Length: 317
Image (cartoon, rainbow, N blue to C red; front, side, top):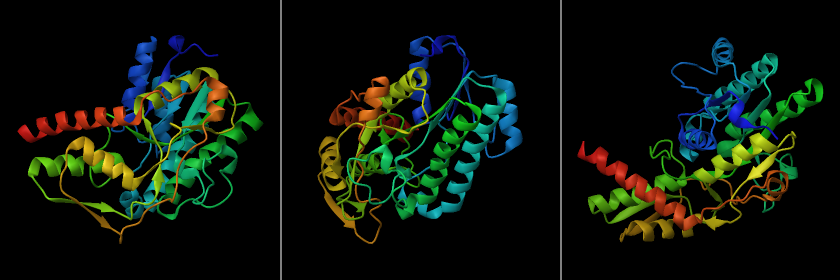
């Protein structure tokens, strides 16, 4: 087990949605030497910038969260950029970490790594059983290469790296930009904004039939820390909440919690994405005591409350 309190920890993506919660949890743990990467200072797609980052930070532990990511629309518009940028960031961060002799590298993958028709619940051994869902395959495959790199580096160099696969995250501080947001913040924004504007309908992409699993962001941050402390193998590990909900039922729940009374229009010309997503998290439980704690409706209420407060401030300005 690694005592993180005494380590210099570099967090890429530390100012992002998950990163802010992770940094807060590290500080609660008593970690004082945390280097938070800001994208304006270091472009991780460029090798020279990655080398400068390692020289400046001098980390013992690297937690690589940084990613170019978005919902179905953003993935469809930017497949080349999402593939190249995520691939180059991950490969270079791990390679220079190896060259620098760091103690541990924690790589954060994505559920988009899984094949399109993975049997539910997704088990880590299913990762190579087929091609990912087409709309997010370039992003998912770029992230999946971190697993290949991690296992190859452990075998050849004895490099201590781990690869985690969190399910879709949600919570306060999420990305509510309609151009790039995922399903929960997108739906919350639609409903809250419609209530404020007294609109009579909202339009939702797809058929509502696909299912998803969601993990509250604070639970994800806590479990990444547990893996950083306790897990020392290169086999991939799922991080999830252990439940599955259809998009149709998710919409109904958010409509209820936000108080929207209007009509829901399903735009069936838009893609559904992967048919089902739900993870088997038994390996995480065995290896480092992972367990999601936040009930889904409680997490949704917290997220809605956060957006309403932020939206009121922005609207007042």
